Image (cartoon, rainbow, N blue to C red; front, side, top):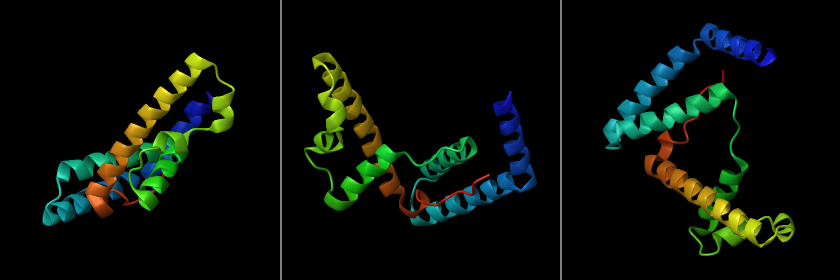
Length: 134
């Protein structure tokens, strides 16, 4: 019940602070800028929708994604990315099948982070535009 009340308070705060009007202005401004630069408006809007949803949920930047981003920014795509991202202490405690599952999960998470990174790089300044927190 407390979670529901907290969500209602946050929604009310967003309404009072013109959060949605500001979001709409940001969407329109970024879409116009993207159109002028020849970047897909739909991709920019889609990227912004994801950020607005994250802001509403109160999600923080994913630590795993930040590690992947740091590797990609400093060294580019490397052949041993999965090895660099592996938590060695945890990995050593696992059995054979669990190690396989862990590596597969890590690989899937890396591929998703890599796709997100490429999308953000493609969109340039529009992907890193921060939306207001509610």
